[in-house]
Structure formats: structure tokens, C-alpha cells
Image (cartoon, rainbow, N blue to C red):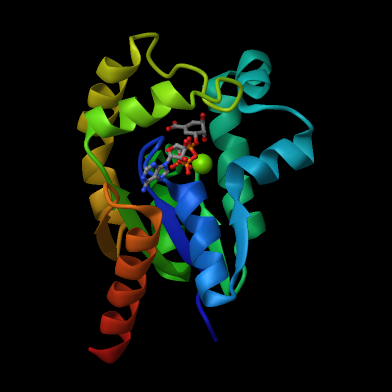
Length: 174
Ligand SMILES: Nc1ncnc2c1ncn2[C@@H]1O[C@H](COP(=O)(O)OP(=O)(O)O)[C@@H](O)[C@H]1O
Ligand SMILES: O=C(O)C1=C[C@@H](OP(=O)(O)O)[C@@H](O)[C@H](O)C1
Ligand SMILES: [Mg+2]
């Protein structure tokens, strides 16, 4: 059975973009937990947070992780999926977990170019560069704990896909 592949990492590291390319390269299905929530609730992340708070969003996000998990599927998670210990354990136990790692300055640069504010309401109320520094300071250890493999996400999406495929085949060979 082909285990699901979970992509984790901060906002802007490319989980959605790389996930779609990896799906093309492998023939696996593609799912994005934020898109799943948008479809099933007919609301954006910003609307869910406005109506239910971040706590409500996090509960829905954890449910979406379980709902989209299936064999032979690439799953792009939201950047905060790793905050819950149960989600970190679930991903590690049910699939291969890949951390797309990029520096806070690169992440901020990408997010400034493509903010998608309805899907990415502010987490801290601080300017984006400071926010990404704060977020990685808090979460880097959680991404590291959850991941089976870490990949440099500051390369082109095609190179990131290649590196993921290499990590997975090396893992299978060892
Ligand atoms: N490897 C990459 N190199 C350059 N830009 C990228 C890369 N990956 C993603 N991007 C860009 O960064 C932005 C956020 O990408 P996205 O896939 O939505 O990230 P995430 O799902 O991790 O938040 C998009 O504008 C996307 O085109
Ligand atoms: O980092 C976070 O806490 C979040 C990241 C977003 O997803 P992306 O990482 O796909 O941007 C989305 O789930 C939500 O706005 C919360
Ligand atoms: Mg995304």
C-alpha cells in the first residue's frame, strides 16, 4: 500500500504549489486541508476565524486532516497543522511527513507578493517579516519533530519535487 505523503511547513513554503507538482510527478491524488475546509464549510479561513476564533479553526483543521487521509495521496497541510501534538503523531504514524523548510525572509517575500489574505489572516498582528520570524521561532522544533524528511524549499518547485522523491526512494532503499 502506498502511504499518504504529508507536506508540512510555514505559510509560503510551497506546500500547495509543490504538492500539486508532486501529485503530477507521482500520479498520487492531491488534497489541501485548507481547500477541503473551504469546500466543506463554504467559508474562507478568515471567515471561520472571525466567527469561531483560531481555536475553532484549529479544531476543524484537525478534523480535516483525518478526513483527507487516504493511500496514494499527497496532502498539503496548513502551516499550523503541527501545533497539535495529536496531529503530529497522526501524520507520522499514517504516512511519510516532509518538512519544506525556508528562511523567514524568503517566506515573507513570497507572502508579500501573493498575500491571499482571505486564506491567511494575520496570526500575530505584526508586519509580515516579523510575523514569519516569530512563527518559525515557535514552530521550527514542531516541524522538525513531526517530519521524517526535511527538504530545502528555497529552490524552484521542480527541484523541491526532485529532492522529495530522492528522500523517499532513499528511505525505501535503506
Ligand atoms: N519553490 C518556490 N519558489 C518560488 N516561489 C514559490 C515556491 N513555492 C511556492 N512559491 C510561491 O509562494 C506563494 C505561496 O505558495 P503556496 O504553495 O501557497 O505555499 P503554502 O501552501 O505553503 O502556504 C505562492 O505565490 C507560490 O507561487
Ligand atoms: O500558519 C498558519 O497557522 C496558517 C496557514 C495557512 O495555510 P498555508 O500554510 O497553506 O498558507 C492556513 O491554514 C491558515 O491561515 C493558518
Ligand atoms: Mg497552502
